[in-house]
Image (cartoon, rainbow, N blue to C red; front, top):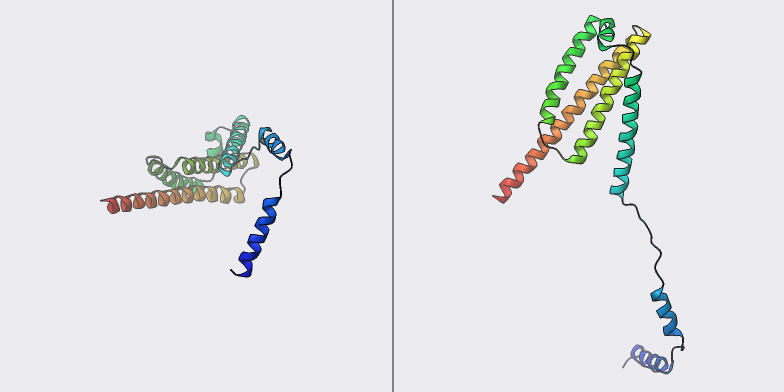
Length: 180
Protein backbone atom coordinates (compact mmCIF):
# COMPACT_ATOMS: atom_id res chain seq x y z
CA UNK A 1 0.00 0.00 0.00
CA UNK A 2 1.23 3.43 -0.81
CA UNK A 3 0.93 6.49 1.39
CA UNK A 4 -2.22 7.72 -0.24
CA UNK A 5 -4.13 4.52 0.48
CA UNK A 6 -2.86 4.47 4.09
CA UNK A 7 -4.10 8.00 4.59
CA UNK A 8 -7.55 7.06 3.21
CA UNK A 9 -7.85 4.12 5.62
CA UNK A 10 -6.83 6.32 8.58
CA UNK A 11 -9.39 8.94 7.68
CA UNK A 12 -12.04 6.30 7.16
CA UNK A 13 -11.48 4.97 10.66
CA UNK A 14 -11.74 8.50 12.06
CA UNK A 15 -14.94 9.11 10.11
CA UNK A 16 -16.50 5.86 11.33
CA UNK A 17 -16.07 7.08 14.89
CA UNK A 18 -18.00 10.30 14.26
CA UNK A 19 -21.76 10.26 14.80
CA UNK A 20 -24.12 12.82 13.34
CA UNK A 21 -26.00 15.08 15.74
CA UNK A 22 -29.42 13.91 16.88
CA UNK A 23 -31.38 16.66 15.17
CA UNK A 24 -29.57 16.37 11.82
CA UNK A 25 -32.28 14.21 10.24
CA UNK A 26 -35.01 16.50 11.62
CA UNK A 27 -33.38 19.52 9.95
CA UNK A 28 -33.02 17.66 6.65
CA UNK A 29 -36.67 16.60 6.81
CA UNK A 30 -37.77 20.18 7.54
CA UNK A 31 -35.83 21.39 4.50
CA UNK A 32 -37.49 18.76 2.30
CA UNK A 33 -40.98 19.71 3.52
CA UNK A 34 -40.47 23.43 2.84
CA UNK A 35 -41.93 24.45 -0.55
CA UNK A 36 -39.42 25.80 -3.00
CA UNK A 37 -39.98 29.38 -4.13
CA UNK A 38 -41.31 29.51 -7.68
CA UNK A 39 -38.99 31.18 -10.11
CA UNK A 40 -40.56 32.31 -13.36
CA UNK A 41 -38.20 32.52 -16.26
CA UNK A 42 -38.96 34.07 -19.61
CA UNK A 43 -37.51 32.17 -22.51
CA UNK A 44 -36.24 34.01 -25.60
CA UNK A 45 -38.99 32.60 -27.78
CA UNK A 46 -41.65 33.85 -25.39
CA UNK A 47 -39.94 37.25 -25.15
CA UNK A 48 -39.81 37.50 -28.95
CA UNK A 49 -43.53 36.70 -29.20
CA UNK A 50 -44.33 39.39 -26.65
CA UNK A 51 -42.16 41.91 -28.50
CA UNK A 52 -43.81 41.00 -31.81
CA UNK A 53 -47.29 41.39 -30.32
CA UNK A 54 -46.41 44.79 -28.85
CA UNK A 55 -44.92 46.00 -32.14
CA UNK A 56 -47.98 44.73 -34.05
CA UNK A 57 -50.31 46.60 -31.71
CA UNK A 58 -48.26 49.79 -32.03
CA UNK A 59 -48.23 49.45 -35.82
CA UNK A 60 -52.03 49.02 -35.88
CA UNK A 61 -52.48 52.18 -33.82
CA UNK A 62 -50.04 54.04 -36.04
CA UNK A 63 -51.81 52.91 -39.20
CA UNK A 64 -55.14 53.90 -37.66
CA UNK A 65 -53.71 57.30 -36.86
CA UNK A 66 -52.50 57.72 -40.44
CA UNK A 67 -55.84 56.58 -41.85
CA UNK A 68 -57.74 58.96 -39.58
CA UNK A 69 -55.59 61.93 -40.56
CA UNK A 70 -55.85 61.45 -44.30
CA UNK A 71 -57.86 64.36 -45.58
CA UNK A 72 -56.56 64.02 -49.13
CA UNK A 73 -58.00 61.30 -51.29
CA UNK A 74 -55.55 59.27 -53.40
CA UNK A 75 -56.91 60.93 -56.55
CA UNK A 76 -56.15 64.39 -55.13
CA UNK A 77 -52.61 63.34 -54.17
CA UNK A 78 -51.96 61.68 -57.53
CA UNK A 79 -53.16 64.72 -59.46
CA UNK A 80 -50.45 66.86 -57.82
CA UNK A 81 -47.59 64.51 -58.69
CA UNK A 82 -45.42 65.16 -61.77
CA UNK A 83 -46.08 62.97 -64.83
CA UNK A 84 -42.49 61.67 -64.80
CA UNK A 85 -42.87 60.46 -61.22
CA UNK A 86 -46.20 58.79 -62.04
CA UNK A 87 -44.44 56.71 -64.73
CA UNK A 88 -41.74 55.63 -62.27
CA UNK A 89 -44.40 54.87 -59.65
CA UNK A 90 -46.39 52.80 -62.16
CA UNK A 91 -43.25 50.81 -63.06
CA UNK A 92 -42.41 49.99 -59.44
CA UNK A 93 -46.02 49.33 -58.45
CA UNK A 94 -46.40 46.76 -61.24
CA UNK A 95 -43.07 45.15 -60.29
CA UNK A 96 -44.17 45.05 -56.63
CA UNK A 97 -47.56 43.52 -57.48
CA UNK A 98 -45.96 40.75 -59.58
CA UNK A 99 -43.49 39.97 -56.78
CA UNK A 100 -46.25 40.01 -54.15
CA UNK A 101 -48.27 37.53 -56.17
CA UNK A 102 -45.26 35.21 -56.42
CA UNK A 103 -44.39 35.50 -52.72
CA UNK A 104 -47.90 35.11 -51.35
CA UNK A 105 -48.68 32.12 -53.56
CA UNK A 106 -45.96 30.13 -51.76
CA UNK A 107 -46.43 28.74 -48.23
CA UNK A 108 -43.75 30.14 -45.93
CA UNK A 109 -42.45 29.67 -42.41
CA UNK A 110 -45.00 31.39 -40.16
CA UNK A 111 -42.52 33.54 -38.18
CA UNK A 112 -40.63 34.67 -41.29
CA UNK A 113 -43.89 35.35 -43.12
CA UNK A 114 -45.21 37.46 -40.22
CA UNK A 115 -42.04 39.57 -40.03
CA UNK A 116 -41.95 39.95 -43.81
CA UNK A 117 -45.58 41.09 -44.00
CA UNK A 118 -45.02 43.49 -41.11
CA UNK A 119 -42.03 45.06 -42.86
CA UNK A 120 -43.92 45.32 -46.14
CA UNK A 121 -46.94 46.96 -44.48
CA UNK A 122 -44.64 49.39 -42.68
CA UNK A 123 -42.93 50.40 -45.92
CA UNK A 124 -46.28 50.78 -47.66
CA UNK A 125 -47.73 52.94 -44.89
CA UNK A 126 -44.62 55.12 -44.95
CA UNK A 127 -45.12 55.50 -48.70
CA UNK A 128 -48.73 56.61 -48.17
CA UNK A 129 -47.54 59.08 -45.54
CA UNK A 130 -44.93 60.49 -47.93
CA UNK A 131 -47.58 60.93 -50.61
CA UNK A 132 -49.81 62.77 -48.16
CA UNK A 133 -46.94 64.95 -47.05
CA UNK A 134 -46.18 65.77 -50.69
CA UNK A 135 -49.78 66.86 -51.20
CA UNK A 136 -49.64 69.05 -48.07
CA UNK A 137 -46.21 70.61 -48.59
CA UNK A 138 -46.27 70.95 -52.35
CA UNK A 139 -43.67 70.02 -54.93
CA UNK A 140 -40.53 69.07 -53.05
CA UNK A 141 -37.97 67.01 -54.97
CA UNK A 142 -36.65 65.37 -51.78
CA UNK A 143 -40.08 63.91 -51.05
CA UNK A 144 -40.26 62.49 -54.57
CA UNK A 145 -36.79 60.96 -54.10
CA UNK A 146 -37.89 59.38 -50.81
CA UNK A 147 -41.05 58.00 -52.37
CA UNK A 148 -39.01 56.40 -55.17
CA UNK A 149 -36.52 55.08 -52.62
CA UNK A 150 -39.40 53.59 -50.63
CA UNK A 151 -40.77 51.84 -53.72
CA UNK A 152 -37.28 50.50 -54.45
CA UNK A 153 -37.01 49.17 -50.87
CA UNK A 154 -40.37 47.45 -51.18
CA UNK A 155 -39.23 45.85 -54.43
CA UNK A 156 -35.89 44.79 -52.86
CA UNK A 157 -37.67 43.30 -49.85
CA UNK A 158 -39.88 41.24 -52.12
CA UNK A 159 -36.88 40.09 -54.20
CA UNK A 160 -35.06 38.99 -51.03
CA UNK A 161 -38.15 37.06 -49.95
CA UNK A 162 -38.33 35.38 -53.36
CA UNK A 163 -34.67 34.35 -52.98
CA UNK A 164 -35.43 32.87 -49.55
CA UNK A 165 -38.32 30.92 -51.07
CA UNK A 166 -36.10 29.60 -53.87
CA UNK A 167 -33.46 28.50 -51.34
CA UNK A 168 -36.10 26.74 -49.25
CA UNK A 169 -37.40 24.95 -52.35
CA UNK A 170 -33.85 23.94 -53.33
CA UNK A 171 -33.24 22.52 -49.83
CA UNK A 172 -36.53 20.63 -50.06
CA UNK A 173 -35.52 19.11 -53.40
CA UNK A 174 -32.10 18.15 -51.98
CA UNK A 175 -33.77 16.37 -49.04
CA UNK A 176 -36.12 14.55 -51.41
CA UNK A 177 -33.16 13.42 -53.56
CA UNK A 178 -31.23 12.24 -50.51
CA UNK A 179 -34.13 10.24 -49.10
CA UNK A 180 -34.95 8.69 -52.48
